[in-house]
Image (cartoon, rainbow, N blue to C red; front, side, top):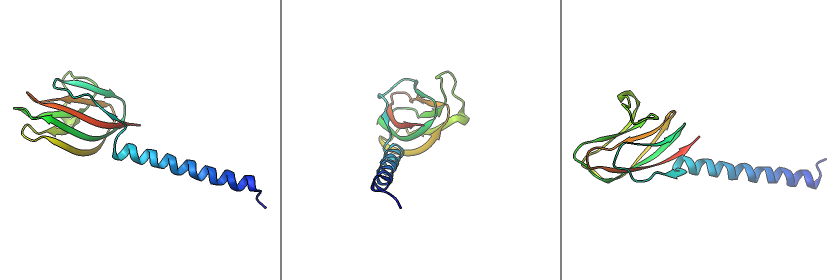
Length: 119
């Protein structure tokens, strides 16, 4: 028969598991980090994770892009995660996984930031 210590340990382990699940879900839905607002091509982070939102703060005269890449030097079009509208501002939910990093290449006159989580 289980002792009181065994029952309490099992309960404690259940609470820890639920808390960890809550932390994981929060990072998927809200993001762990918010980048600085950028207006020039910028490497935001290197590594793998999930891009949660893009926030276009200032529209521009040309569209920009967010890439799954780790350098501002010639990100390939095939690595684009999201185009950045040149006419709209606001928060755009994305929820895309990235494996290399996040690079923002704003359009002319654009200001953008992102929220993201790392694996």
